[in-house]
Every structure is written in C-alpha cells, then in structure tokens.
Length: 541
Image 1 (tube, rainbow, N blue to C red):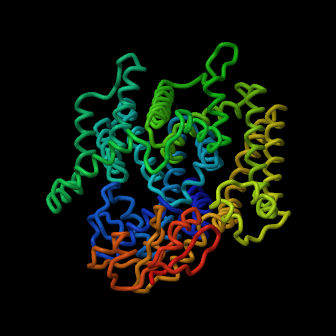
Image 2 (image 1 turned 180 degrees about the horizontal axis):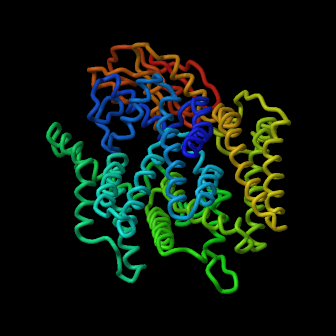
Image 3 (image 1 turned 135 degrees about the vertical axis):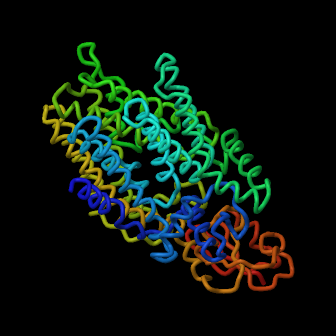
C-alpha cells in the first residue's frame, strides 16, 4: 500500500499542469517533433527532424512520446507525459532502495528530499530526454553496486547491463562514458579493490550492447554506415566545442546545482563538510550502505567534473547529479532528524539566503510585468525590450507567492536552529513542493507570453495549410511542430535562398526576431505582415 501511495502522490505532483504551456524551443519541441514525424511518416525506426534523418539522438525516448501521442494526441501533455511516468518510477525506486538499505524512515526522507527540490521535481514536468536517461544510468550503477552485496550477482550484472543499454538507446554513448569513468573512479578510490569480477563485466557489456545494437544494427543494414559516423562525429563535437552558443565557465554546473537543487543542495554541502567531534556524520552505517554512499559520491563527482570540462554548457547536462545529490542529502537529513547532530549556523544561513533569493525572484516577476513600461528604456537588447511589450495580466497580490516562500524558508531555518528539526525540514520541503506547483501552473505560462508565445501562435495559424513556414536568422523547431509540417517531395523547401528568391510552388511565410528586421524589411520579395513582442512576420510576394 505504501508503494501505491507514493505512486499516487507522485502522479499528483508530476502530471497536473504539464499541458498548461507550449513546448519550449529547442529541446522540448525537438523531441516532440521527432515523435510527431514518426507518426506522420510511419517511419518508426529512424529519428527524423523536418523529415530528414536526425542522427543526434537515439529513438527510445521518442518512442515513448509516440506511444503517449497515440493515446493522448499530438500535444504538449502527451510530449511531457513519459517523464511524469518516469518521475513516478523514480520515487518508487527511491523508496524501495532506501527501505532495503536503511529503513522506512530514510526511504520517506529520500522521496521527500527529491520531490521537494526545485530542478529535480521540475524536470519530471518537462519533455526533455534527461529524466529518463538519468533513471536508467542510476539503476545501472545501483545494480552494479548490488553485484558485490546481493545473493544473485549474475542477475545484478545482467540488470546493470540492460539499464545501461536502455540509457545508450535513450541518449547515446555518453552513458557508456559516464559508467566507465564511475567504475574507474570507484576502483581507484577503493584502493584498487572491487567486487565486480571479469565475468560480471562481460555480462554487463553483453547486455548493454544487445539493446542499442538491435537498433544501430538495423540502421547500418538499412541506411549504411553514414548514420553511425555522423552520430559519433556529433558526440565528439558536443564534448569538445561549445554548441549552439551554450558556452560557459567551469563552475557553471556547480552554481546550477547549488541553486537549482535547493534545498537538497544545502544538505549535501553540510554532508560534505559536516563533522561533529571529529567523527563522521554518517556513524552507525553498515558496510553495504557505506559502499553505496561511495558509489553515489563517485557518480556525483564524475558527472559534475565531466560536464564542467565539456565545452557545451546546458542546464540539464548535470541533471544526473540530482540522483546521488538527493541520496547523500537525504542520508544527512535522516541523521539530522534522528538527532545525531545539528546543522552549523552558516549552513542555516546559506539555506535561508538561497531560499530568500528564490522567493524574492518569484515575487519580483509580477512587479516586472506591472512596471514593464518603466523598465523597457533601461534594457539594451532590442528583442528583450520588445518581449516586455507583451500584454500579460499581473496583480500585486501575486507577489504573495514569493513572499510566502521567503517566510516559509525563514521559519524552516529558525526551527532548525531551535532544534525542532523535523518541523523545520518538513516546512522547507513541503513549501518548495507547493511553490513548484504554483510556478508551473501560474507563472511559467505568463513568462512564456513574453518569451515565445507570439511566435508559437503565429506558427499555429498555418496548421493544416499547404504553405512553407521558415524562421530567418534564428534556429527553431517550433514551426515544424506547431505548423504541423508535412513531408514534401520538393527539396527546395530546405533552402532559405530558394524560399526567399526561387520559383516557389506555394505560399511562403517567414518570421525573424526584431534584431534582424532591418535585414529583411527592404527585401524585394518580402512583404511585412506584422510584428508582435519581438517577432517580425513576412510573406513572400
């Protein structure tokens, strides 16, 4: 019954409001469009974008979206529904593992810590690949760890390999790189001792290879080696050069995890630094739990350092850290709630500081909308200024949500300082869960009205019409998904110059951002049809 309760509670957390806002460019629309094109084309073995082979991602997550769209239709809810199910599976898995290794109290704390932290929770309401990929990687490492402690090591090796194979089929060879690095790091940290034998490694490798090779092999047989070659070249480029303008500093993901995984991240900091009387804060642990803790630290640092080194910096690249982060933070929270030790004052200060910062930012959103006209003259970017011209209904009362969170965090921190630990922890995590729901249902749709809504509504008016729609000078997948583009035999549709100047065979509509308006306003073949919130619309004469 407890597992059913967790599943139902997770469903209530992750499923509501997932269709309340348009899919966001690029990633969400990218994957949803690949699923839509599978349905439209009937080609379920090859990932396509714009009805051309798309070799950047394998198809497993796309297949899950296809199944969801077959049930719920081609829409935002269906695109995000698979991750909601993955979220349910994740919390149930946490409870089962936590109960097995520690006890039921720890299992409850682990599920609460994960569900009550911002980005870990929020990502299960998204339509991106990473939550699904992360669960498979985590389970692969967990089953590998169980080889040394379980009664059926061969079965654990097979399960570890199967999970790794599913991860590869979800996002590609990055899964293998991460797992191999974790294995090597654990081996070194454990003074070159490991319970995984050669026969286990062979089983893991075999089962990890069977699943993706069943698809890769089909691709090679059907379309030759070019797909595999392009796929590998892309992976190398992704790790070696900034992609799509997403560069950043080495400490980019460190900051993302500290703020984005609040409040769990604060307890991870406390776990890393925490000492009491020179003794480990994790006293009383059995060897099995200590070993898993070592694996989780390894996973955390491998992912964090790997993607800090990688030139491309995107928020969700470090999302695999959420799993070990939540486990280690929950273990600290569990000991804290048991009264084994107390938080240091600077930990509580950091907790209150970051929590208040998040609350103030949320409280400021309505104020930005209400005073947009006063802010616009002080913004240098033309596109951002035009975004703020969107008509969005705001009220002063909406600042109350952010102020409520500030108050809740302060109360939680004070309770922790006064020794009322359980009350303080519950206040922090439940108030976070509440505000995440408010943010997704109330604030995100309003923010989207500023960012991309004008473009999405422009694309949607062409759905079902036999026209070309093309974005100029910015990359997007939204025109494909929301204009419901159909496959066409004319290859010229992929050529911007042909659409602008060639002998087109049907009406052509263009969109660009206001920054590039001057470049096209005097084009002899274009007619300005309108502009809205930073987007400019043209029609081919």
